[in-house]
Length: 260
Image 1 (tube, rainbow, N blue to C red):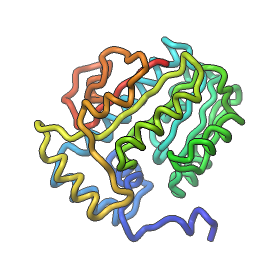
Image 2: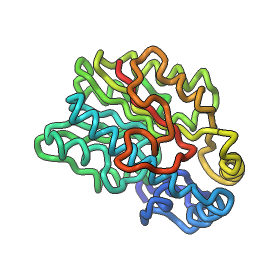
Image 3: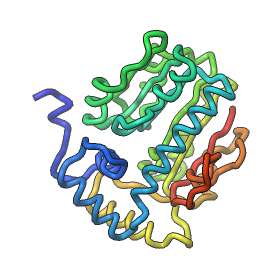
């Protein structure tokens, strides 16, 4: 058994595998599907949240590559490979794009190394690290990315796993402080909202039964992650409302893109 395999716990549902299940993937276990179905009963629209977040990723990466000329992406908390991963979207536009994926889930990393293969002109690399391991992430990422040039920092659905508010803000600030002017922050976060009370019930179920536990924040609290940056239109909104090709219902996953 490899070190990665020994770290995979199939006895408890895991967020990356449930997300994979909701988006139609096959990299999950019965315990994940059971929890995913139960959460779906509590909040029937949850599967659409996962899909909406994935579509937001594609739109944000396309915008940054096409309109802002970004050629470097640091994607932390990447999750299990799916359709239109960051490097695929970016390298279709600019084959020389460099992408570094970071995750601390062994199943994610095992699949990433096997499936996330970039173009010959570009570079794609993978790091086994926790979001809080900032020095480790930056030092390893610098072997693939030129941190003196703009980088898009992708934090989709990952700061929700830092419970303490101030610690989570500090982590994002430290990462952005290390990046060059012209860099961008792309962030999405589960929210608590009075118009969506069933979301709170679904999150409570997850935190009782699943791993790792997550923290909801209000839309205003999510907007704080972009303090000190130039927030791009339309601001911090439901990820389904961030420059969509066609109108879509709001989901309890808020997101924004900002420039340093």
